[in-house]
Length: 275
Length: 180
Image (cartoon, rainbow over all chains, first blue to last red; front, side):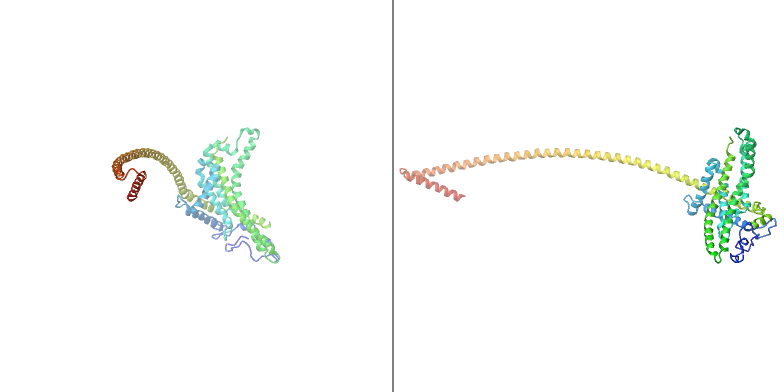
């Protein structure tokens, strides 16, 4: 069922309602997220597929945009520079300074800004014609980013708090909890050290995965229903495609924002003196 | 649902990250991070700093200009007040000068008038004297004439006498009319 790399559409186009063809034969599913490699073979150690292509292209687009805007920045900005500055300033002030503070946060601005625009671009691929696939709906990409944040957080906590401090920070050590303390510490340890990076990645992944599935569902349904009496339903379904596309546009930015906001919260936790 | 199960059965769990994608994801992010952190964000930070300084410098400059304008305004006001004062003084002076001039001219006029009057008086006196002199001579001559005539005529007749006098007076009148 995996998509053929030469096939542009994600489903069979000659399957319609009232034509002895069930929706199950075209409905989206996990197979919609699998791509036959463009180069190499799925079972090889190294291959190259659509999501990789989109990831690299996305990088180039982000770099290209900021290169055009910030390569030779002017004190009196042009239009492009103004737009880029607005985005940069939004993350710098609105996210980093707000959560970590100006003095401590300055060091992490490049990481957070890169994360935000990289994730946003990966998400936007979802509604770019022809590409139409959110790269972050493949767990590997959010996982890598969450891992980078996780490593940063662990290293930073060790550096700031020392070994005992790290332990206290991770377990949320608080004497006033009394008898509940061992339980609370166990839960906190699991939560912070094991579950948090996982949820950090999955939150982004699942949102984009679900968004893409919904878009696929309504798009495929619109086409599938386009036969006989089904045409009326196809219209409704198509309206949903438009609504969901607009909604996805919002979710893409929101999820990128949530990801970097959590990143900042984690870093702030590492920097904070434990009480 | 069946397909989901089939897919899961195939070992295609979407939560298990494929390794090559991890590598490419890391690479793609490192590219973005490298460019932004090493080159582009320092670039823009420098410019933002410059802009902040330029704006603050501009504000300082504007403040300087404002204080300067203030001092110039005060200077100007002082000059204006001085000029007003000077003008008032000049006006006062001019008034005083005008008053003295008028007084002087009035005195001069008075003097001239008195001179003219005095001259008139002496002229009149001289005329009167000359007139009385001439009159005296005329009256004498007339009296002599009248006496001569009266003496020439007979004095016994009172009516004649009155006729003579009347004639004399008529003569006088004629003379007076002829001379008029």
